[in-house]
Length: 266
Image (cartoon, rainbow, N blue to C red; front, side, top):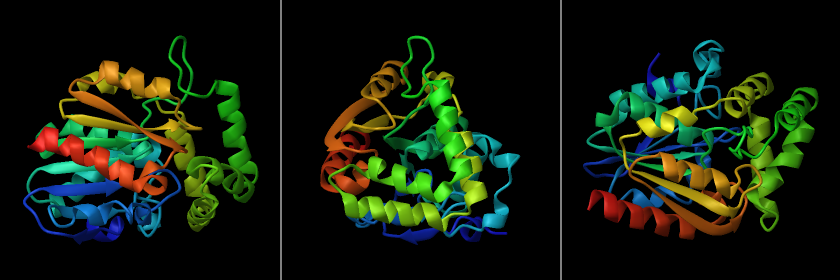
């Protein structure tokens, strides 16, 4: 099976360098429709669906391989090997920001920069670390997914998109519901129970941490924590409520990414 088919890869644009976009939990590559076109004149752009999501080959989702985010990072490296040209700028939203970090730590020579949109290395509170959820609340949320996935989607999606964007919330509900529910629930547990804080210090690739000023999933303290621990990283906050600034505040997100790329790539 080719990785292009497995991950529903779409390539556009021209340029010596490649920009790769990876979506978050419950989404697909359509979530980049407002961002990716801004870079097609200067980059070869690659959009893909995480294995098990969107238009990927869902039979390729392996609960052993994809039982940790490292399996998704290996998928990404295979896509780069097959489809990229020149240095790679990786743009990952939410869980895919961590997937990109893991891939870049495994093969730093492949990456020129990484843009981490709404990132979190760990969603659970732990001592002085504020991840946003205590263990009991997280288990309650995951149980609600197991019990009634459609109702969970209708509650969660508007929060993620922000109260001022109800139409985007409905779009995200539809995206959640297009996924296989069993796979989505498994991937949610892998995502929300992962802890990759120790991987931050291993980063060798310049990183932009791009977050909303009010995020219902990732508190601002997470960005501050990552900034202190990731070498060669910078933090930019978009004045927006929600977890998806690449959709709800696309213009501001492009400005932040452009400024970062100007500094990093020259």
